[in-house]
Length: 87
Image (cartoon, rainbow, N blue to C red; front, side, top):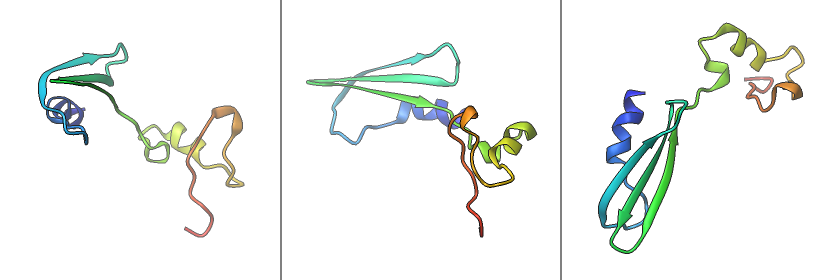
């Protein structure tokens, strides 16, 4: 979260925008932010969010569900990452 909060005020888009004003909005989940940069001629918007790699989760139940016995992700749980056999 510290790195995300630092990036909110220093993040520079790849487009050449002469920044006149920057607005940072926090979404209700408090782990997502919207950065709006207003330039001389254009406005640029970007959402910055925290994401956790499921297999690296500190919650043992989440990490366990990420890897099933047959190596296939459970469809009911939605997209999951998995380690391919042999790695």
